[in-house]
Image (tube, rainbow, N blue to C red):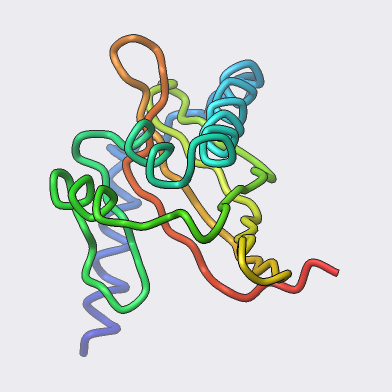
Length: 155
């Protein structure tokens, strides 16, 4: 019964002709480069001043952190969470592999590989990450969502 309803709904939706698809802006290379550079600067700040300082600098006021074993940490709670972190025993950096910017130029995302280097043990852990970004009124980018996954073999 449910599948017939779904098929009916989809047929009705696409046959109305009211659904217009806006062509994606495929010539936004300059915006992609700006966003990749923002992500690289974010990583550079993490290398220079620590993960905490970098995340506090680059998080949007309504930003969300998705962390293992936690519910999403949002807005002011995300900033409080970051302030409480002790990042003195490791260095976190990352390298974006790609970026996508919306046709309106106000949202985008980056993804790539991060490395977590322990300062006490000669070990580096790797994982993947994604940042979803929002352009600020001054033209800069801040992330509105950050998430990562552990365990990437980069060899």
